[in-house]
Length: 330
Picture 1 (spheres, one colour):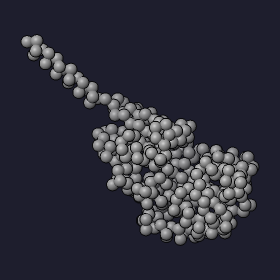
Picture 2 (cartoon, rainbow, N blue to C red; picture 1 turned 90 degrees about the vertical axis):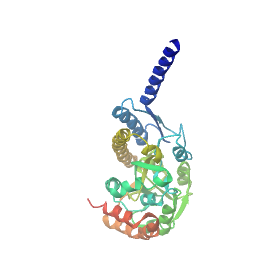
Picture 3 (cartoon, one colour; picture 1 turned 90 degrees about the horizontal axis):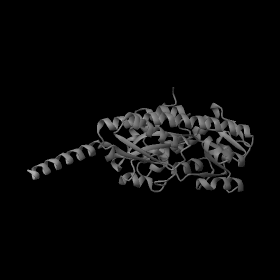
Picture 4 (cartoon, rainbow, N blue to C red; picture 1 turned 120 degrees about the horizontal axis):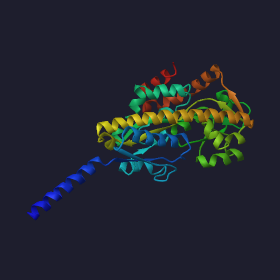
């Protein structure tokens, strides 16, 4: 009898432990490489709050900012290995998985951030999120850093001929290299941390970046002119392990997507506000003058850049380039 009772008690205990395991929340690690105070950092915090609110008891989100879990060089490998569930690298990091993301590096393709939003939220933008599934990655959302502006140590910066012969710092990107070569300028690949000193000492004559990056790194203090070109976009893609994502219960996946939608709206609003604020601060500082381009100026830049679009059309896809151009029409 005691043996029967013991077995019965063991079965009850086992059933309780199985039930507890079944109800244990899914742990989601979100790793990124920037500070919490940045738009991306705040977006990750917003995602945690929204996910745990929408899926109470079903998920637990842990956010690891400032490369505290994985740095730039390891985060993509980590998500593929399942050591982290969400990361948000720069779009330029994905060109080894799909060349199609080079679209966002193409110069003077989008008129402004509103056009970028229209493209990313449209069918072609959503298709791009799925373009790395065969490589094990699932894109979930686009988060903005902002539109790029061009700066130099020269007085005039309104037409393509104004940059001929100048040396420009670029990120490691085939498209960006082709962009400056098409203009008769000399691209120099250089780490972000080295740019200020290179501008200050004349190792390079100019650079391209968002208003927030220009202000935070004080590039405006060592440049003469900044042109409000909006000629490219610096963005991030929130990605996860494709197998992990597809294996989630449908209700959890739906809830996480809603949480990401909230976080995306929050992060992108903050990025836009930050760039607008920093543009005004640069103007008020009066160290570099800001030049605005006319429609004719933009048309001249776009015409000069068309050979670059053509060069990468095969890798990116004519359909994507066409959809991006159409997004400029309200």
